Length: 80
Image (tube, rainbow, N blue to C red; front, side, top):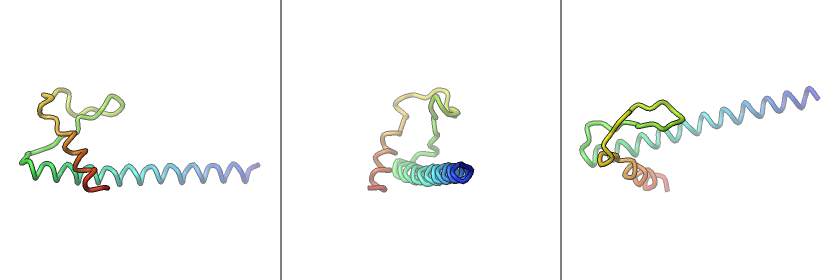
C-alpha cells in the first residue's frame, strides 16, 4: 500500500510539473503573438487585462482598444 501511495504522489508531482511546463510554453507563445501584433500594428504596449480568476492588471479599457482577437489569430497562425 505504501508503494502505491508513493507512486501516486510521484505521478501527481509529474503531472503538476508538466502543467507548469505547458503554462510556461503557452505564455511564451502568447507573448510572441502579442509582440508580432504590436509590431505590425505599431502599438507602444499591449496589456493583459486578466480575468475574474486571476489578478486583473487593467481595471477599465475601451472595448475598441482590445486586440485580443488579433492576438488569438496571430497565435493560431504561428502555432498551426
